[in-house]
Amino acid sequence: MEQRDSHSAADPRYVDAVVVGAGFSGLFATWRLTQLGLTVRAFDLGSEIGGVWTWNRYPGAQTDSPHHTYRYTFDEQLLSDWRYTKKFPPGNEVRAYLNHVADRFGLRQYYTLNTRIESATFDDASSLWEIRTDGGETVRTKYFVTGVGLVSEPVRPKYSGLDTFGGELYYTSNWPQTPVDLAGKRVALIGTGSSGTQISGWVADNAAEMTVYLRTPNYVAPTGNRDVTDDDQLELRDGFERVRAQMRAHPASFPFALTQGRLAVDATPEELDAVFEEMWNRGGFSLLYESFDDVSTDKRANDLLGDFFRRKIAEIVTDPAKAAVLSPHYPYGSKRPPTGDAFYQSFNREHVSLVDLRATPITEVTKRGIVTGGELREFDVIILATGFDASTGAFTRMNITGRDGVSLAEHWVNGPRTFAGVAVHGFPNMFMVAGPQSPFSNLPPGAELAGNWIGDCIEWMRENDVDRVEATAAAEGDWVQLCNDIAAGSFALAAAVEANSWFAGANIEGKPRAINIYFGGANAYADKLEGEASSNYESFEITSNVTLS
Picture 1 (cartoon, rainbow, N blue to C red):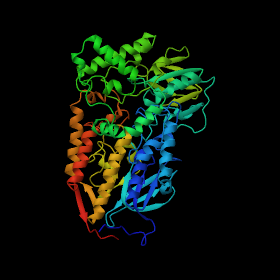
Picture 2 (tube, rainbow, N blue to C red):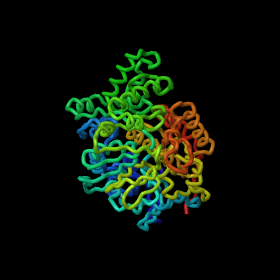
Picture 3 (cartoon, rainbow, N blue to C red):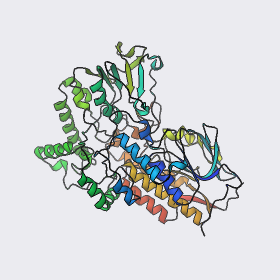
Picture 4 (cartoon, rainbow, N blue to C red):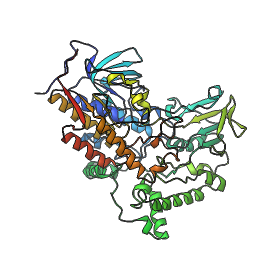
């Protein structure tokens, strides 16, 4: 007979599970755990359901996953009754979708919003987690589940004098909910990752002057965005089992064919240009996943793609000096590749200028503007698109302390250490959805995969009178080594530090240079989790019949 946790009568602060996060990962975990009959409290720092999309509401924000894959699949009716307007949906529609899911499945009742987790401490005597919030509340729980996402802790740059700037200062990662007016204003845009490239077109259209400050150039492919048609919606309803199977088989959880049957190193120059041009026009991640089978595995092929990309930049950007600064020379895939439709074109406009931070770093921000190379440029507005302390930042800010008083920050002092991105040695009954060292792939399928695995594990624990599970040190060490070995064997990832990529923590000054992602493929990762469950969790220390106080 299934075990039922029964602490609530003795301790009104107790719930069976606490979930942190109100985006795709946290929302699915909340749904899955409530389906088990658990009592659940869920928390999020945001003012509404939506996770990263609650904060990143800057103009131009959109997904780079196609509409039919950037959604949940656990409910067939939900698949067909929600319609995005664009192939790559805008951020406001993703927020609306997540709020629709919360309302449809009654999940809003479990959430306490506008709340920061100040600490999470494991009590070995009771085998419970004690969660403290910034509102002064303490919650005790058996299962502590995080769904905080890979990119939810923004980077606040340490420019000297930034706090003295007398104009308007905005972060793309915490964009105001009220409209921002740039008419007649001189605007500095710092950062050219996904957020910077997406917002740049809006800034160029609305500001009197735009100066872009660039440190590491990116490969910015067009999106090929278009309206979602009635036929698209019918295909979503009638053909989703095929799409689901393609996502399960693909290393990045996209509905792309596994192989294209062609190699760039064997192609003629004419064939290369024809295929690359077709994929460029198709947009999104097609250049990486649908052009040639060897662009991610053979440096010679990747170099050919890089050459094509630099030629495209030179064709679009009419000023050769600007084109040279905007052209990356590291392997495509070393850094998370953004997509956008107006970025390169904006540099042909007379009121748009470019500053190469590799040649002239920012030395100071003053009341009037930004100093580089001894020169002050005056601005009315500074927009910081400076990225995230990815993967681990959202965890270390929560002050998590596990068994024997060891903090997660201490455990990760040299970089993240997990078992399969779902569990950590020394932190019993703590589970992570999309945690560090999980795959870099399309997020919603990954959130469902890990969320379901966690739900199944907890269900197994309750059915077998298991009080706690904890990843073994050996299993954790093996996973870390596997992540490192895969990265070391990849010509692209070997250049992640050179590319200042968050894949290796290289975008954060002082952060350990360590691989934060499992790059063995979401398909192989799913196999691993399924095998772990089939083995009755052989990679975990299992404790039964702990006396609870």
